[in-house]
Length: 146
Image 1 (cartoon, rainbow, N blue to C red):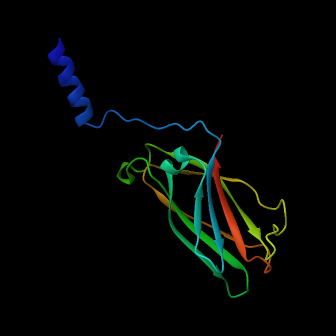
Image 2 (cartoon, helix red, strand yellow):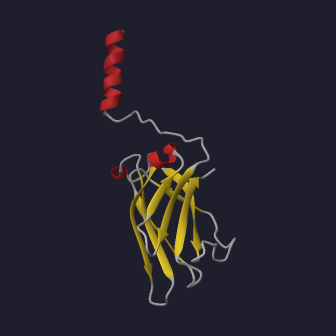
Image 3 (cartoon, rainbow, N blue to C red):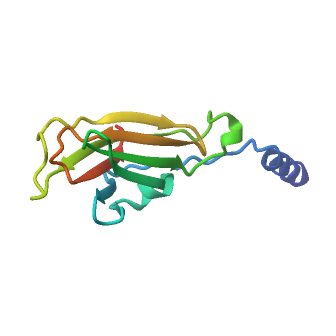
């Protein structure tokens, strides 16, 4: 009996039949702070969240019309993209807040939370353009989707 249980356990592990998906129960998240004069800064207030989502690349430029554009590429750190992203999906919400030279939000309240789901191991660029030419920096906030 003992031997058959061990063989069954080894077979289950060898075929990938056992997956552990981490579940976060906190309300924390992560922020990416970008400015024209300083490199992007990633702030994480929740280890569980940053274990699931990583920032791969940031781009912060002023377009031809004079508006700032932020593009942040994030990756689901769980799972394998070879699984077609079906396993270990990570759902989160995010919003961009644009700030002027005084640190005040440009068009307060205009920023909305958006929900995104990334399959296991998948990466995706998230972009936004400032609503005003007065914007000089932005804060991209991430949190758990509830």
